[in-house]
Image 1 (tube, rainbow, N blue to C red):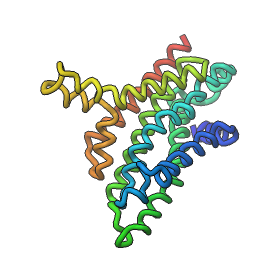
Image 2: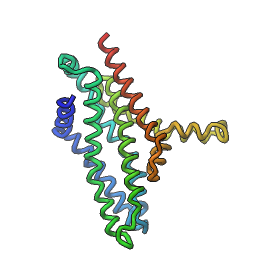
Image 3: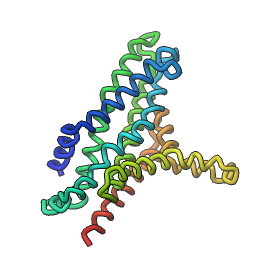
Image 4: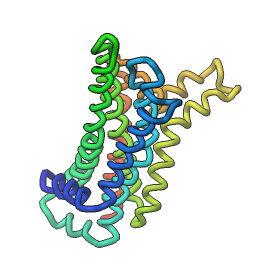
Length: 243
């Protein structure tokens, strides 16, 4: 599994799409946080990264599918998936190798954004006037959200040989799980009845909960469950392919 993990990372960084995806994420967040008047930290007047943590999930909703769309689609298209089956690797090891590689790539993309935290830390009045606990909680929330999105992207990639189809399908499912339940919960038929239950089913609700800086085991279990569920579906899809 370790060899597959490094192979996927090497493959990602040897292609232009890898650097474009990461560069796009850093460029957009930087422009919004420092130059767009409506969201600019300098204009806002408070030592907070709320605008970044509000924008990041939206960008990751497109960037993660772009990273994961090729993981199985390309293997199936080129016929190298059968070659992987000849190696001493189980289906689970193949899936986890690709999953952890994609998650590592997202972690690398998030790493440069720490400069936003250090900049605000220095610019705060007094110096260091920023909720460090809240920032750490929000970064952890982003990581858990990325884990769920990566699992969804890998599953969608296992469904088709077309990378564009895998990208679109993954982005749609991520968007539905992130916003869909919130939108449905405000329907008059659900308000005051099961609206809170419906909100609890959405990724956005649990991401916002973690972003407050308080680690709730219910949020952790939710994200782990989403990741496990889609990785299990991927495993089922690979097993079905062998029949």
